[in-house]
Image 1 (cartoon, rainbow, N blue to C red):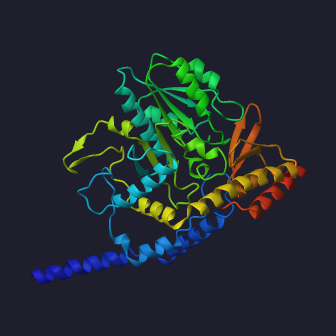
Image 2: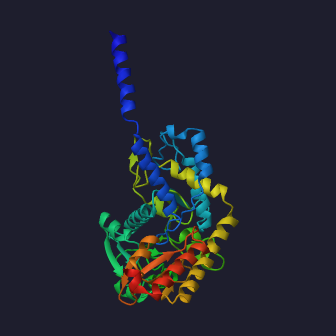
Image 3: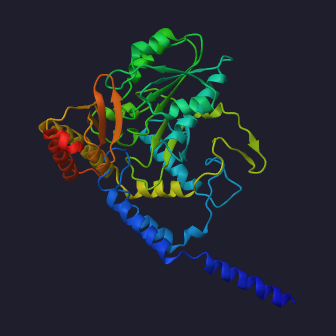
Length: 415
């Protein structure tokens, strides 16, 4: 009887397994999607996602060891020993240490983790800032951010029930410091989110000017979070003074969020968040007996694979290579401006930015390069092109040629 039941169950398992196998049509659909994704990635210019992922060797190693059979989970504090042993905390900590040095945090005076995205990093920056400021004052803090900063800040302020004051931006997208000064409440703790750079125009808020206003007009506690999701990856490697913008020794920010799927070329959203130790120490620990630890992250279960990819990227890429790629991006951004000028297309670019925005072309061109639209009372209908590491001169030449043809006959191009 037992043997008969076992045979029936085994048959059911085998039958169900066969029934759930992908059909020929489903496999063909997946194959077509994969081919389209790889082909389309070569021409994307409107969004800051590096198409040069360069993870071939990582996935070869991953498949060789069949690591897809291990459910990795980085739950808990990566700086503490987790009761769940299938984690990659040791690699995550090395990633954090690598970037903490790059961003000028003092030794043993920081805490961080690998995030699931830039927004995840901003969420933690605002949460850490809120908890830090509440430890200094009974008054609730006010969040100050430019109206052209990333849209996540508004959403996160709503989620965390924080009062938000949007600061007017200049025509080129930078926070208007005079408007910040006029809206600053000196009686309430201030949580300032600084953009490096803004979502559409690629502007960089003036940290030094913002700090001068705080020193002159605000005597209470303040916290500065740097949203460097867009530019934090490459600025630290660019020649000249630009690297100081993301160096805590020069710009006294309290935390920073940087994306890993932008400059660094991850094939999925991820990033890095780092704060000072003082900000970390002011969190409510919320000790969890289930994990025999406190969980300082808002997210509980976290990807164990993302830190491995980030670790692989920084270990397999010399600093000199990152510097070369970053400086080539800046050079190619200037080249794009030159080509658009030559094509007679009005365009604008902020300092140290890989974003060039310009008068909006025909819909056909917008779709071909996945360009993002925007409207400005000063500049009119706009689009932008973001020069990521996969954007080489041949793609810029092709894009500029299309723009030149559109400029010569915009009516025909729109038909």
